[in-house]
Image (cartoon, rainbow, N blue to C red; front, side, top):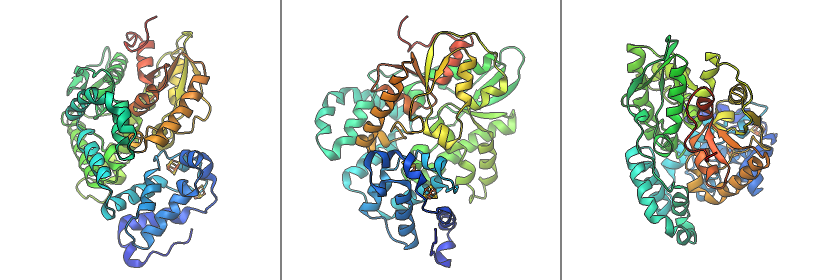
Length: 434
Ligand code: SF4
Ligand code: SF4
């Protein structure tokens, strides 16, 4: 694609990067065929190619974002299906990140949108506040149908809908400590606790820690580690995202420089995509660039790390598992087969749902801020998962678990919970009684 940025515009590294991304696009439109919002809405401006044109026009002309641009870019899930499909290697992720930051700086959103976004930014990345909000949501839940009737209140209705009926107690596995390896020690890793997952489903990290320690890995939950920054990053809050990234780099470096780390394990693929991008996000920060790059190089999804431990192959268990690959797993981190191989080796029969490349609509805060589209995508995903007639759904991202789980009677678990069970852990409590 031809671009016309001026030399002074290109002096800004973010603009220069966006220009080089834009130049790779050859307008072929292959990406439209796999874009969930284009498939749902049928509007070229809600396709990757349409959005690329909108971003080019806005950035090249130094134009503040307007309502139309914001509407179409807000509808983007950041699922990165387009980046997987694109034959020209267009780095859509960093382009939309730049565009979102530009929107935040140049566009004043309507009052209610600002209030809702402000609430999400000030609550979700903080586990204590998030837990409190979930408790309050139980009181507000009966009013969700009323809120749904007013367009400006739809995000509130979506939040109430998504809030679990029971708030899980704080798990000791979420607290800073070192979990010793069993038997001969084979390695040492840190595990990300994060923000929403320890509140919504602490059993996931508990299963990962049990499984890793059982196979000889020492697991540390570092002190002062927190939200990875993905939630605010996708909302264009660049500085807040960088603040989270710096805090986590500091936390992990205290471990790297004292007892050493072989890997930083992540059990939420949305967080993994962002942590693997810390090196890029902090590349212009002289104090953090090198350490952030080291952290990104050490970051591993748990299903990426487990194959290095050569877990034994187990006999068939007679349990069919439909594997839902989160977008951040398959498109963001390009991890496709490892989770399925692990499940098969652990004795599960793995089934692939149709349209596995399409997003379920969860996408961070998307299912709150764009609840109508998210709902359509969720029902499409649920229909494909239920058509597999599997006993259980497995996936690697807490957002997908909460979102898909709200519309199906199928049991949905994190892949690592099934692996822990197969390799000597207890039967997950959340499974229906036999
Ligand atoms: S990230 Fe997903 S929703 Fe956004 S343009 Fe690409 S395919 Fe479409
Ligand atoms: S597939 Fe790639 S090159 Fe083709 S229009 Fe989409 S982003 Fe551009």
